[in-house]
Length: 54
Length: 412
Image 1 (spheres, rainbow over the protein chains, first blue to last red):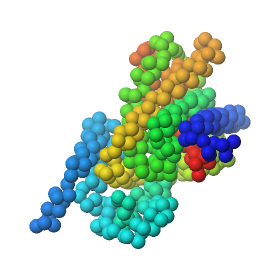
Image 2: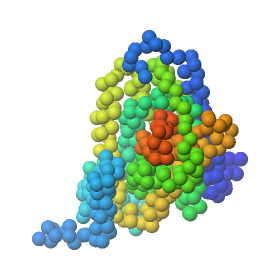
Image 3: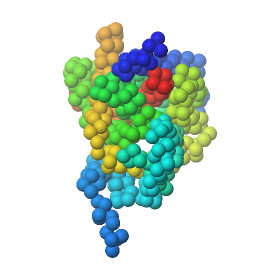
Image 4: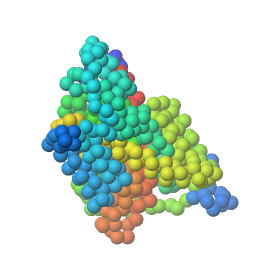
């Protein structure tokens, strides 16, 4: 498929980059979201933490 | 006497136009306070480089080199090597050797090596507080949706005739993130470096003018009045420290080419959050950021040589930059409206929040809060907007990294 795209027009390449790019940004940010969820679940704020912590 | 008047003899209308452009940027910086830290040095750099003989760029007069002229004619691929590394400039197909002036040295060592954007990211990372995002993690998706403008603008640029690499670099103006735009432009579109950088920083400062009409066009008054709950929760220090490390590893695995961008941003953030490097954190936020910003601005200005800048493509790029910001805003707002289709009454997003998913921090969040309060003075959406805005900073570098990874796959 990549070979076909390499021979394709710039617009076709652009569409591919757009599709994979937008999906990729969402995918990576979903991973970040999961990281935040996991971290905040396993490391909840404890009241004894120093007052510096936000 | 002739030597004394040589400067006047060389003066031409193009140079005068560039002085006016430089002055306009300086006036915008001083009078309107539009990104003054960058627009003022850029404007002054533009004047400096267009003075007769451009000694800040070419320290000695250029000397024709017939051997290199012929060599590059026979081996066109070697052109960038001579231009970027060996201090040659090509005019009308002929190669001229020069000794670099101080701004050319800064360009070669700070921008073409991508060093300045990376150092800026260390400073930006040290300034970012991810706490609002940890309190509203769902807002991270607006940071993805508002990158739509990057890709849509790239397609528009291709449709009007730009090759894919410059088109991608132009699209990145929509990241609303100057260092990312510079980073991508220095790899994909050195020839359009000046207009892309100027557009990226100019439009960032124009967010309060660009976003409100687009948001109003796409939302109803009822939608703009939506209130959103905000829970004030504290965040553990462990989370604040572990997050930048985890993000760097994930970005490195998904798009290794994005590591200089993501890694430097997260390094700065780790310095901030670790709690034991306060002095370094302050240095990154202040001294490092200030020095690199100063050098970056004047160096960008030095790329605005009249013969390169005063081209129809410059106007096209400036126009496309505006398109990118409009698409970004629309992408974020429409994504929020889409999500609202699946959310219960009383738990819906105020769609204006979506527009804050761009990287222009904290300007975009403030614009959204101002708009919300204009509709209802008792409606506070600032914290949600800040969460989306912080996500936009992550989204823009991820988008930049993915473009850097994907485009070379297709064009080599």
